[in-house]
Image (tube, rainbow, N blue to C red; front, side):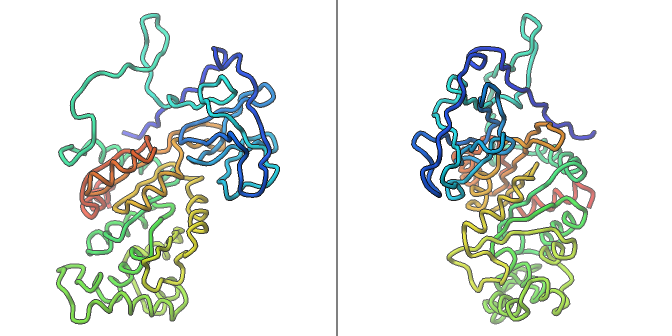
Amino acid sequence: MSFVLNPYTEPDFTRAPLADAPDAVLQPAPKDGVAPQGYHALSIYPEYFKIDGSWIMAQESRMDCVPVFEDGVIAVREFRHLHQGDLVVCGRTENGRDGIYVHTKGFDPVCADAAGDEAPCPDNFAFRLGRSRETAFSREYDELYELLKHEREHGYVVWVMGPAFSFNGFSRTAFSKIIEAGYVDAVFAGNALATHDLEGAYFHTALGQDIETQENRPLGHYHHLDTINSVRLHGSIGRFIEEEQVDNGIMYALEKTGVPYVLAGSIRDDGPLPCVCGNAYEAQDAMRAHLRKATTVVCMATMLHTIATGNMTPSYRVLADGTVRQVYFYCVDIAEFAVNKLIDRGSLASRGIVTNVQDFIANVAKGLGL
C-alpha cells in the first residue's frame, strides 16, 4: 500500500475574526541584527499575515525567527540576518484579530459533525497515548517504511546522526545500504560520527574497539587520532577515501553517491576533520539550507543535534505547485528523556521511537528490502 500524505485544510478567511481582521503592523528593523519592539516570532506551524487586505502565507518557517514583508511575500529571517529597514511583522496575538493567524489544525483529521459539515475529530480519553519504552513501535516502523518509499520519489529526506552508528559493523552497513538505495538526501552529524566511521574502515575499530567483537585493540585509543591526522594530511574526506582505498562505511557511501552532509563542530572535538564546520552559525546556515527543502527528518541518538534540527524544521512545506504538505519528523533514541526533550522544546509535530538506534537502522534497512 502506497503512503498517503495527510491532507491540508486552509483556514476559512470568510469567518470572524479573520474576515474582519485589520492589516498586520509592519515596522522597520532599527539596525542590522535587531528586530523592532513588539516583533512577531514564528512557530513551527503554517502562519498567515494580512497585508494590504490579503492574507499571505509564509512559504517557509522556522521557530523563533521573524517574518519580513519583502517583494510581496513573507520572508523568514533569523535575527542575525535582519537588515536595517527590513519590514518586520509586529504583534503578539495569533488568532487573527491583529492580522496574524497561526494555523495549528491544518493537518488534523476531520470528521462529519451532526449537520454533515466537516469538523475536527474530538479527542477521546484513552490509555497509553504517549511514547515510552513500553510502547510497541511496529506501526511506526511500517509507516516509516512506506513514507521513505514515497519520499524517495517525491520528497527530501534528512537524516541526523550521532556517533553510535559507527560503533559496530552491521549498523554502518545498514545505513550505507539506505544511502546507496536513494533514501538519503542529506546527512547532519558531528566530527565524531565521521571520525569513527572512517576509523572503522581504516582500522576496523571505533574508539579502539573492534567494530565486530567490541574487543579493545592494543593502542586502540590512538586509532581515531591517527584517522583524523591521515584525513588532514590528505586534505579532505574524499581524498582520504581515494588515497587510502577505503571501500566501506557511511562516509564512503555518502562520498560515492554524492549525497551532501553537514558536519557541525563542537568545542570538545578532536582534530577536527578538515570538513567539520567549527563556526556554529555557519553550520546552522548550512543545515538550514537543507531543512528548507526537507519533507521528512529522522534524528537518531544525538540529543543536541536533534533539538537544533527540530527548532529549524517547520511542520509543513509548500511545494512548487502550491500544495501544502506535512513535514514528518522522527526522533529515535534509547533514552525516553531525549525523545521527550524535543517535544518540550516546542517541536510538537515530532514522533518518538524509543529504541537502540543500531537495531533501529538495521530494521529500517530490512523493512525497505535492502
